[in-house]
Image (cartoon, rainbow over all chains, first blue to last red; front, side, top):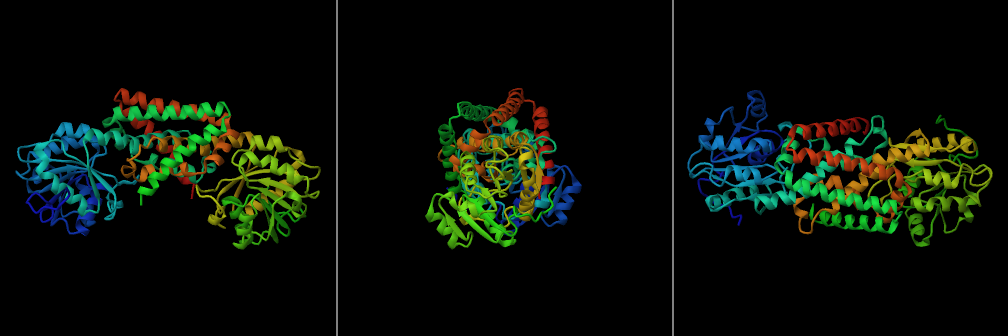
Length: 292
Length: 292
């Protein structure tokens, strides 16, 4: 797994298409250029103005406001918000050549993989991806060629129909600096509910509790716990909807956990509070050891 | 308010006593030395070894493992865990000279201020303090002379008995670089429940949900949301217990907020999710503007 292949389906010597040239799409473009992974990058999007700006910034080589130019693409990566990925891929795939490959960068995978399937068109293969990198910032102005360095990228192939494309997709993310891990879309969504989506909801719930005029009484702890709450509301609403079942389960789990704190507080049980906090600390430290 | 006074009660030209030479106590010592606020600093603690290390590190000038040396102190600052502050102050005050001043750095104020009162001994005056600065790190090895620069410090005088000491306490924190704000201990505790204590509990509840083996699938969002969960469990258990009533109210509020997310998710109501997230984002941005 993960060996770089030299078929025409790889982007290495071909044309890369990126739909949605924002923070993620722009960083993929910057990284692919910096690492010589693509001869040519076409940026797809609705806003000609924004794409022209990305062109002038040197991130993309060509601008396309519809998918007809997808016929020139060897690897198409959809970096749109999750509620628009399946439709974008389905539309683009109609124009793509046999042997070309499609992937995405969406934060929820099951709904997208189910809607697109392993072969959105005959001999056009789709393998879902999710690079675990990002920022609360938006727009290609914050693009970073090193955003993916040493980050995990999860790939979620859905069947024998797309397996031949897997080595190329893996090689592409590895080329950007990622460690690539393969799992099913469902497993991805259950794990990401705990590692990303629930933390986002919790951060928003904490941020929402800050009363007006109290800002100056919040410090570094509040800053970090709530940072991600500055993310784009529409973008995150679409992620939460796409993974609503697993997130609902995790919200229930965190509410149970909060109830354990409430119970220990009401009982003035410092020992139990300390036990709850020590368990959380151990889990956080396990994460720290793995996150460099 | 806040004008530096020149009475014998100020630490400016006198002796500073610090009980608990850890991250906060050590940083106060480092800042007071760097800014020439104290002629001499006595470190009080139970562990002679740790105090000797702090002495060798140049943070304190003298070591005291009981409170008899408090008779030499003009300003005594208790930086112990909140469950030990009242007892420490009561013990130290028995040795202190008339006209000397006591304060603390505890993260919960009502219980401490009620237990200590404005005058723990006749003519020994207590004004509670809480500098809003810290770290998940522990120990004077992480002491930072700039930890308090531009941070808010809340002071909570409790009555006419301690009012004459207020200018000196305010001047001391200002001397360390703080912006000083005065409020009642109860008001402090209600605000800090929202800005610090509840965020800590939420971070712990999120960190606790991370399953073993999933560490590599958590990224920058998880890192920030859960950072404070690496704080010392016993230290935080004592803070939570000391402010249990207000924190209980805030846990209930955040559970209500999470329920609103669950409801919107179950209804697949992207618009409502977006509204909830946009409200949280606006609150977080108000904080960002005030936090430099």
